[in-house]
Image: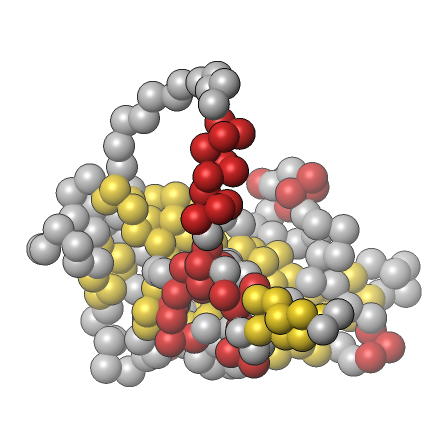
Length: 225
């Protein structure tokens, strides 16, 4: 394997949605934003001209939803919610491909992990791709950076994909919604569900430095830019 090659491997690679460089699924808000705006008769750069934001939405790889998923929420007479996912995780054909959504027991999580606008039910995307990186390289798995508001949020994790020889699945939470507006939410096939960001592991040392000349350096930088 090349030192800069990440492999996405599947027995069913000819049947399922392939991962893509995340720059191919740049969020719509970014594509629609102009580079400059006029405000108070002055020309101002928008966030689209911010290099850190550009890098955040164009670096790494996106794993796409392999099928359509439907989340169905109901409540019983005691106002307790029930969340059903279709297709069922019991579908044997999808299970062989490691495609589906599974649940975790609520005791496996801390409720402080759940955002106030989310349903407190721990779910997990099954990932049909075995991911392999060169020796010394790991991967960060998280929701795509700076994307539009979404109906689900991944629990961020890091895996040593140079030695971990199994599927990496993705725990997540679903945003809650008002049942009066409908019982269903749809995650469409081909929608990015995970950012895969490979990086080289290293041993870092931390140092806190006092620099009495820092303000002069910053002023010089501002002058040059």
